[in-house]
Length: 128
Image (cartoon, rainbow, N blue to C red; front, side):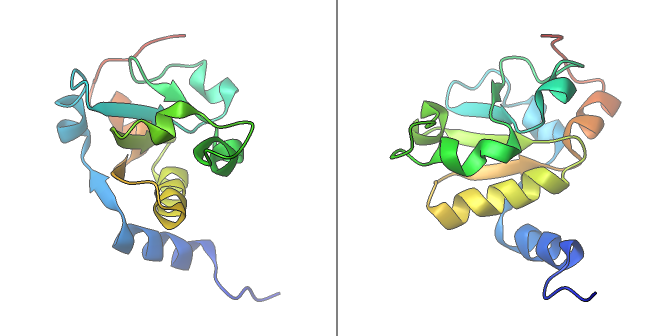
């Protein structure tokens, strides 16, 4: 079976169009009241640890949570704040950031390397 667009191509397209923030730069934004970290991992992943103070919006429901007309809308997406998305390794968050940009959500970026890079950098971790 041959796909029209595989995940490698989708990731390359997303990374060409979205903002990517290094873990080092992301850590410096932890206390910025105009920045919201958004954990798009599943509940079971988040339970292992997360960025302190992060919002939770699992990737599976992202479009519904981002849409202000949806019953599942999460106000973090209409807050006007800078949104820094992260997943485990950066793939899902890159695709999610691209989706949000395509939907018209402003000021979206994702963290390079995801939560794995965050932990490797010994950045602060909350255990929910």
